[in-house]
Length: 200
Image 1 (spheres, helix red, strand yellow):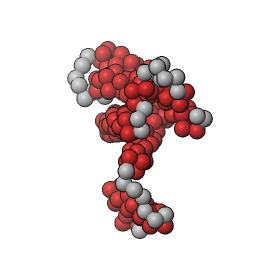
Image 2 (cartoon, rainbow, N blue to C red):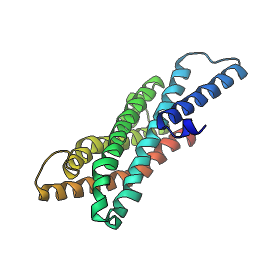
Image 3 (spheres, rainbow, N blue to C red):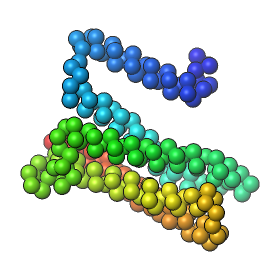
Image 4 (cartoon, rainbow, N blue to C red):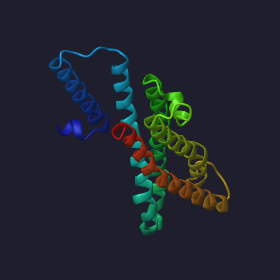
């Protein structure tokens, strides 16, 4: 057990294996599932929720833990955050955002409400589609912020791209403020996604 838990890759493989085992147990206990649109919709939702947890979890890590505590870290230790921790976290952060959007769009398409939700159900006035559409637009705005504002500015702030010290400071501030905008939007996005599934 120690060998599994001391390695991240082995831990992730163990988690996947346990998930597949549970899937097979439920599959056989329930007489199997049809591998139809409902199944693929479920699988896509599973992926969507999993990567969304990583995305929003990292967003909250940056805003609740890393940013507020940077001033408390001694200057000689700050390079460890800027050169090692932050770039690794930003890698998972931005790709989790991209996969959340992609899987969400595929999920909406599989369930037949993609166009109606994207247009906020203006033509059909279905409350569920309006609600999830708002969540989709919030997610799209947040993902745009991640890829086209936060990440380019973080590359300058972290020294991945060489620039003048003043630009570094300005870029760090821009990345932080836009990250805070995403934090503001995160609860409304989660609310609308869950409300669309449970209130309508």
